[in-house]
Image (cartoon, rainbow, N blue to C red):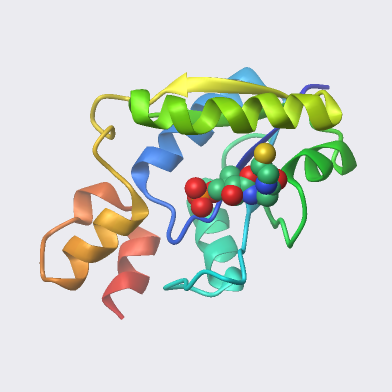
Length: 155
Ligand code: PNS
């Protein structure tokens, strides 16, 4: 049984995330989408809402589940949940430079490996914060969000 964790704040989940989670699900038997909350950050959606949107969007994929990560180290979360790998999407060399020290530290902490998947070219310009900004200023971002998420954004 090979289990991986896809971590993130998912505020909210967008199609770039969905594509990476779906590819992770084709590589691993189980994928836990770990929804993190950093209490010093402001979120558009509550943790419950973010978990619910992940479930509504990718919960139907084989082996995929969503759970809150709470506070604490991602490396410990992976160990507690029997996950041998963290899966992350890389959009650019900027992501790479940001991610490598964390991947190295996570491997140092508990031996968990990080697997990087190259983001699909349709989504390399996406981030939840950019999409929220454009949407809040009236831009059309519907093609970048799952329908269930778009409905909540429009509420
Ligand atoms: O979607 P985000 O906000 O970019 O996700 C960041 C996340 C949750 C992957 C990252 O902040 C994280 O790993 N947080 C857990 C705390 C931790 O383990 N920190 C040390 C990293 S080496």
